Image (cartoon, rainbow, N blue to C red; front, side, top):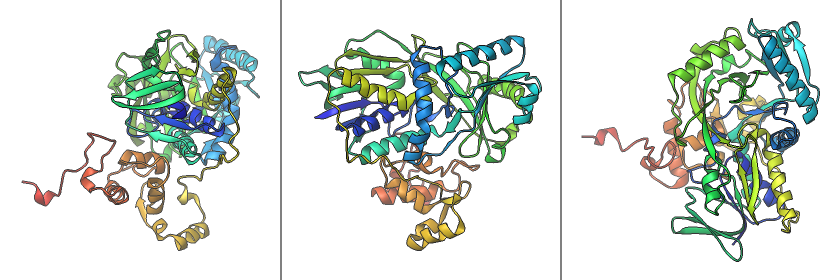
Length: 477
């Protein structure tokens, strides 16, 4: 029996699991997919928001500001790339200027440091490629960027290294209240725990209903993105937003921590929680507003596009509730959920203490995790020292992203271990470059097959049903 079960291995569940492990609990993380970070975490804007957008007094405001302050240290501990590049909310007319001033006042009340309202001249000075129509901006120097799935993988891995367990392909079908806590079922399989943390993202309302809590509803909100080549990453230095509406912060333009340029997202409520299709209409909207935000964005340098679904709750705020002792909902964690995730995790442990649970510091907890990639950024001397010890680091597998065999093998052997091509991609960036895996995929498949002691035909792109090969061409009829 576990002390706590966390349902959902997105960034919120990952941070909660790590915090619980830090507090001496025996933890099990349950994930319906084949890997962690497969829901909203996999496809979002990768922004650590400063905290000026959420209404003062809300959980979003409180936890965003706290989480933003915590994130730099968390990223350092977990070996995750983090850059405090600052953000700009740009205005195009007098109405926008009024909104910018309101955001300044709100952010100041929320406790965001060093906010400024700047004019066109100052905006052009710090962002030379800013759109011709922008007349003002809110400047938030504490805004930052991070890689969301890298952060999640590292947090889950760190929790596992400190004793947590991870069960993938465990889709929760029922929850039973017991004398000692809860039984969480996936078909006939089950896990017992004293505490359940519901961090199931889009399905958090479904999970809550399994114990009779029907107090909220989660709606999927489609967000489409276009990602440009790394040669475009220096087109902007800050994250550039438009003034927000009730549906979100509009189309942004931002560098990524890996040097690409990200544009998007759209924001459309839909019904289907599995519909991640991209649309021509969505891309047209992204391109139109991007050209208004920033001059000369070269969309002919696009390397990929994708769609993510955000878990929009019906309350307008994060839904962090406890309908039954030992059962905590972390629901409706849309933007700024990534930014707030370290603070949300801390709130979970505070709530459990208030309910009378004993949480003791795990004195053996090691918060440090080695970075999973970055060999290419080392000096020639540093690379040679590593290659002397392990020759696999001297073989480049992914030419686009300069990822070595040694890095791929280390990722395959490190918690949480990947079992498919996309899992290796998220951990190492192999397959993320211009060719999108066209050259390196066969080599990675061979490594996965050997390390997992399976045939190469059993290696998939992204779990069950995503078959890559069925046999040798010479055997085909």
